[in-house]
Length: 245
Image (cartoon, rainbow, N blue to C red; front, side):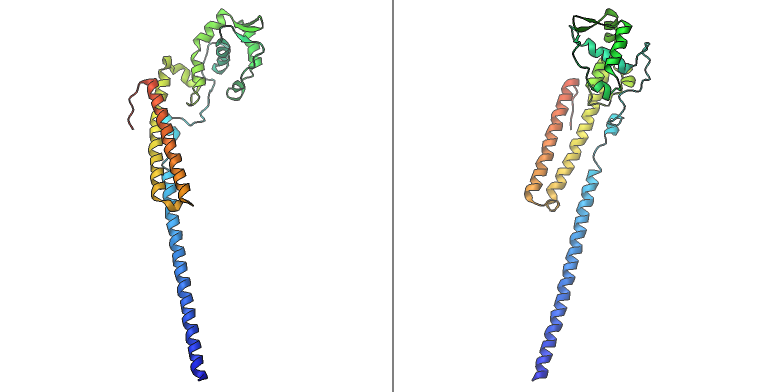
């Protein structure tokens, strides 16, 4: 009797241990399978991320391209970046108030001590102080008019313009139109890239922690496409260029 009970107990323990090993093995297999699936998902995600258009491929320059190099010969003792300050002073009919601060971007973007340079312009006879305003002389006005395009290069800072390289090629704004065309091509590529991201999000819900997160990211990318499309339309209006994408 005792021997029979012992055999039953041993048999039970054998099958219990065997079942535990089988369950553990299945769990390990599922874990490995899930890990491999996650690896595949992230590999695909990073593959798409690497497809993002590169700024330099469309503009021929990096986004942080130098704003000047001081190589252009102005025929004066001043560099182009310095003459930009003279142009700034010329952009009011009544003259700048002497209490007006010179914008800090002259220092940060063009390495110019504005107040010190102003004194050089005064010594040159291009600017004088009259009734608490800085007034350009006829000579100063002529120089400012000659280099007025510097202001356009400066204010269109969404493009990687370099004063010394691009001023000679300004050509009454034709250069700016060329950069709008480059921007359109770049934004078209951004739209195509964003569509690939959306397609990945839509077919890979397991990439997200919830359905809400998935939908939020998809809507964010769609909003970005709308923003890019609006910018393309604005650029197209500026250069009357027919764009298809």
